[in-house]
Length: 199
Image 1 (cartoon, rainbow, N blue to C red):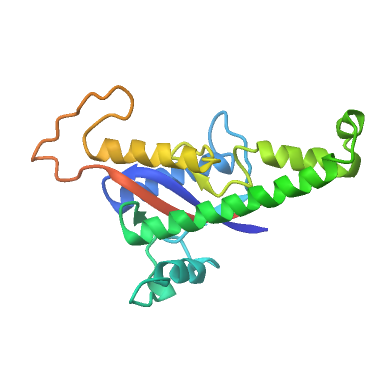
Image 2: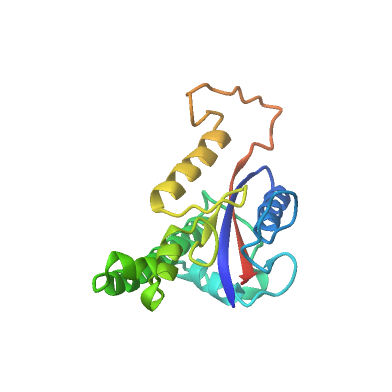
């Protein structure tokens, strides 16, 4: 099955953001040392036509006065743009709906089961419990630059704030300011990279 995920990364340019997203996606398909694959393979919008370009074009066009042609959908979007925010909001909505559906399935099964039944995986209840606990995989739609799942709206907000603080020259943790020089025209910013993954 295929799924549209989004990878949030820092980057100075679109190409830099894509390279960082490819590194995160490589980890999700098991490339590299100490990685475990959760997807079979991936494709980003710079590599080939994607089945999700029409969806991304619709999300970007929704609420906009301009219609976006799916053939010109960019491979990465600044998080501080309307397009980037719309795609992030869309991913959060999908991830929340997926989690809610899984939680409902788990609750409807577990209410009628004993502890022993749950331990014995009656009605496959432990499968749904496992999905609720996933940090990577088909129930997670948003990832960071390291291939880690951002599994809640709070986790997404904190990570986006971290990317924003890095781009504005402040650190997210201890409040130390990083001096931005005029020579540094390519300041890092947050980017959203959509990817088609297969599992």
